[in-house]
Length: 548
Image (cartoon, rainbow, N blue to C red; front, side, top):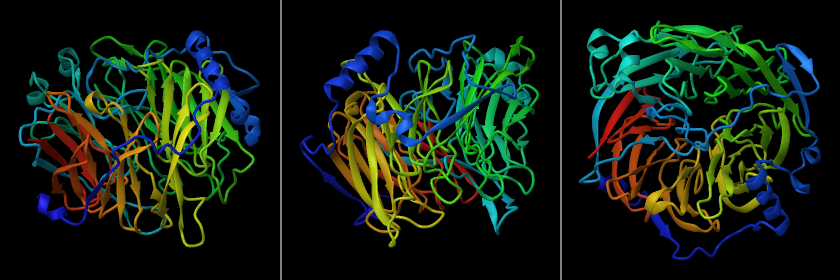
């Protein structure tokens, strides 16, 4: 399979870390960061004050407008120790969005092999022509080995309920269904659930093993507004919906656009569901979950909704709305919007702490990492090429490292890209953080650079912003790269592209180890459980690929 990419993929290495291209934190920023470390308080500096960008925010609690809010049960996430479950249970695994792989990949030949595939379907669009097909962006599956006591009470088929080593794949796709599959062979583990809305984003499971699943719709179905669904996985049915026809939303383009591509987070300690929406509303809801080992129920209360406008948001450009999934560090939430802002909110007061101008629409999710050397929290983020393109549909997209306490830019580098209306260039994929032998690197996947059809995977030094190596791709990609690690702790990168190729590369050097073709565009992001990769294609198939 390596011969298929001869002349199509080139690795460019740079031996030093010296090409940093942006400012380093000043003394004031470091002092503010120390304040965060010592007191848990995040404070803006002058250039990240929300007032500089004309932010105006509003709050509603249980459908009543309020001027201020203090959460009675404070939210405090425990680092990125999001779950003790075995598997990948939300987009990019946890509240830092730090990865989409579970366990060790015990590889010998470092090759890719098709294990099984399952057909999905299509859903006719109600606006415009055509159908929603297969798995779209971000479209990551969830993979979980359920605790035995939970497996026994769910509506699994008997053969699966009694399978002690069952690992289940849960995959919502654009044909409007949630599929439940056995990771071992792709066979159905239970009846699929029909939602009737295209699902582009990624679902989430309750982190303590309570059998609840939440997923948002990616578009309206005619006059039926998109919404988020909460599913009881014991009965296999939807038990709660929210977000549809929300009068609190200020987004009015195309009537009243609504979508929920973001992957929700749960704070188990306070039983709170957290989700931003493309309708421009951030939702937090106390679920009042009850699970007795035989049945599960929720009784939502304390529904807090937050919205915003800025000096440049409008119906024709710099739209309102949040497509990216949120990151949470302790009680601070970080999320990007369609209007070129990275925002930090205090979840316990729902106040906007700081904002940073990241210049363009960001569909990628921020990724957060706490430095092992000094305990400083940093965010890595990039953007699509949308609002900042020139008349030739060309422009530079930025990649940022940002101080999570102050919102200040640590470094920035840019790449020239093309874009196409409705099928953006730039960075649509979420960054991949290296660990173990690649812990000094962060990986970004750039679409439509080097030509409209082409792309690039870049490995960037976290410390300086210098490029360690880059790989030129014949076909661009929206799929997020995933890092897997062998028994020695060496890291390898999995990347899928718009021609249906899945590549396996050495994370240290960029050397191509193997490629396999899955037939159609892979814009969804893979998840990995030990030696098995799962991803869906726009060609209406879900594939499992074995790391050999």
